[in-house]
Length: 326
Image: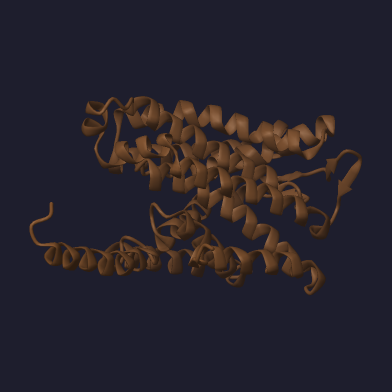
């Protein structure tokens, strides 16, 4: 019989909470729960491009907005099952992400961050000014999402579908991280030259990371349309990018569990500070600077080291006891 690990216990607790939640809370709490699931998928997407591939990109909110508007427009025009509109948003974001990934072939570090930041700002300008498509600064009303005739008009109706999509995206992230493809991404993260010498196509890996990250953000945008009836383009600015970046950095860059924990924590904090947006920017900035300076590996790095150290010490002790054995 396998011993229960921290991950198993955390997963069981999360499942129990998710199952009980709809029967014990009010509508606003369900709205926050739905929003947290969107943040989890957003953070997982940023984890792929920053944590797995090591590409410091600041264009995540742009792909999120593309997913929202694409899903909203497809749903309003043709009223397909919401799965189709979510896939449309994810696909378009993935294609644009793959194109933006060309920047990663020519730039790195701060230059890549600035270039992707510029793309994000340009997309917000598009959201604010392309009135014929996005509604411009007035925003856009979203038609209720549908699922084979069932209209999702409340947070409670959208809740189970959001759980399913979030669980699927989490499973895909874990599967990617454990696959040979994930190993190739991490090889590129550590050294382009070394990865290429081992036969990894670094160019393809970087573009793929941007495409996958964009797809995750686009899917998160489509998920948002399941329980929200209005989108304001001003909410798709740099502040949202900083929020998601804070989730990933504080949770632990390169840690799937850290991305999920960071999304849950800072999603709740952002709701508590909703009435003071200027304070939010200050708090996120201070937190980011503090973690970059004093705990760059995030909250989960120390736990990994604490687990690894006794094992290493045991290995050293075992080696000494064995004497001449190799």
